[in-house]
Amino acid sequence: MRTVLISGGGIAGPVLAYWLRRHGFVPTVVERAPGPRPGGQAVDIRGVALDVVERMGLLERARGVRTRMRGMSILDAEGREVDRSTEATFSSGRLDSEDIEVLREDLVRMVHEHTRADVEYLFGDSVTALDEDGAGVRVDFAHGAPRTFDLVVGADGLHSTVRRLAFGPEEGFAHHLGSYLSVFGADNFLGLDDWQMWLRDGDVGFGIMPVRDNTELRIAFGFESAPLAHDLRDGGALRQLVVDRLASLRWEGARLAEAARNAPDFYCDAMAQIRMDQWSRGRVALLGDAGYCPSPLSGQGTSLALVGAHVLADCLAGANGDHRSAYASYEGRMRPFVTLNQALATENPGGPASEESVAHAKNALSLDG
Image 1: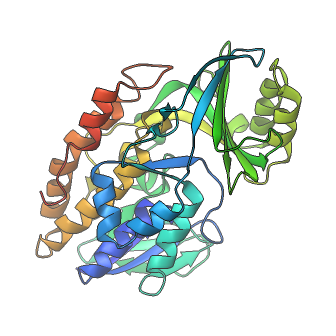
Image 2: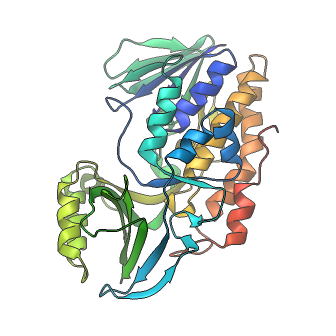
């Protein structure tokens, strides 16, 4: 039982492929995008997740591309500074922490480069059907010929295709948290110098941080909303909705709206969690956001992906070919950790979780069982 198809080429999937390869498995990663995905917000590598990155030999490289903020300003709706901090930022927490904040695209590229020599990647393709029997799982692809694998892992995000095919519609597992988040890049038209800005105006707000030696901005714009219709989420209407909401802001609304309208890396999705009674069915298992998305409100999605990948590979390696036993062990080790981290997004809606809760959640698991 050595061939494993991993759906999803973001962070969780390639990290799982790395550890499986180390344990003698033959992983294949299929990713819908034509290559490693660019764009995205800054993400945090915290607590035990730092150990995963260190064991991969990537810790120093990650530190080399970390964000280096000096602090942040909090603005009122008119753009006037009402508070500031040189000790912490909302995106990364305390600036003197050992935790690392990096751009998502930098971490994706780093892990891909670290694995591409030993892992088969199928870019520009996706899973369309799964048919399991006693010998394995026959997988149909959108473009490639069908293939059979011993195991299949869905690491394909909040809207996981593997989860839908193996467990049923997303609506049975997704829990909307009352808001949407849009992330996009722009030129540094504000002239920010390693300094973040945060503003809230009614039911909308944003955080802006400079990246790439202060030449670019990453803009994270959030707005409260009930779940939107699928025809709106799936088309250009969602971008237009974000543009319109930004344009209504009293401070820098016009330039922010224009940036969103023209951004090639525009992203927007619901703030939601995936909650499931089990993360495996037969030979299929779920990893990261596909099985237990905590939402960006937790600040722990990347850490859960990194840790989950290490634990799943470790459990498969120690199960002597018994995938049922491996999956049960994976759930037993990860579920308390997931529960604590998902709670970070719900314990203080609209604001950051307490430092005590974050410290407890990020270290509440040992990689070695």
